Image (cartoon, rainbow, N blue to C red; front, side, top):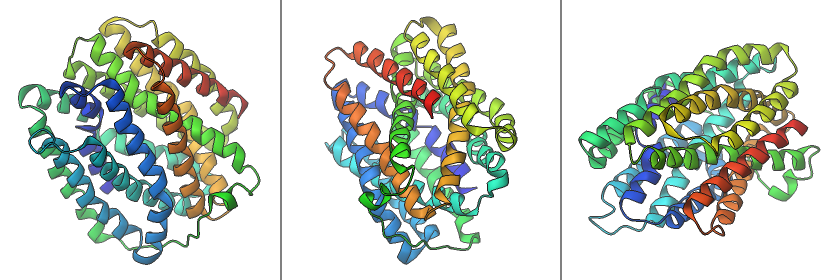
Length: 359
């Protein structure tokens, strides 16, 4: 319930944050720097968030996130009024995200069942997607009619509501003494380091570069961009339960390889897309195909986590994913033209997706 309500709340606004910053007059490079700080903080704070969970428990960590998230959202809302640094907000936002996702993933890794992990992972994927299905379209409409200020305030209200289910849950604590060097000594972990980095890169391009490309292609339509994100979610929901059940009875590695091939091809096709119909069709196909990679890959990574210390492996996963994102974003700063940055991002996403053929 907490994950579903927060997913809906953040779906109203998250896809529009880069657009909001661009509309305020920040350059594309500054927006990229904002996400470098955000994702870098998310990865760097992960070991400390897990260590804090040793002392106060996962439930309290998730609740602790809320004031930081509200500060982040209200800071974005008043960014012009009080001349707030976007990089300070990125630090706060990345830190709050780290508190949340480490906890959610650790809880799931420890309490999901190996024999049914594909089906259970599909629920982890799809239930928040269902809850947030209309969020981007509603968010785009609110931004168009009432402005971004009302959008941020609406999101903040739902974030506050999301903590209510936590009062009815038991708390669990973790046991983490994380060392990145120690984690790399485990068999297969270097392989997972590389693929977690690839996983992070393709996810980032999906939620940052593809929406911006659509926004520019639709000549600044927030509703059109929001609708394309909703269509992507439809594709994810349509396929998630089916692949989740299949992955419990099929070779998960084969599904990942098929998904890598198809998603890699899709990114290169997206480079040549033009117009509303192209964007909507390719968004829906992206939602379908991404499930082939992400769902079995996450299930396999949770299997791997349970061979070791699940909590420490989740920290390793979050750290590695965000390391990949930061390296990729830093490379995009070397590309001068904004639209070339987008095409560079699509190409890199295509290459790292194709790399999953070898997983």
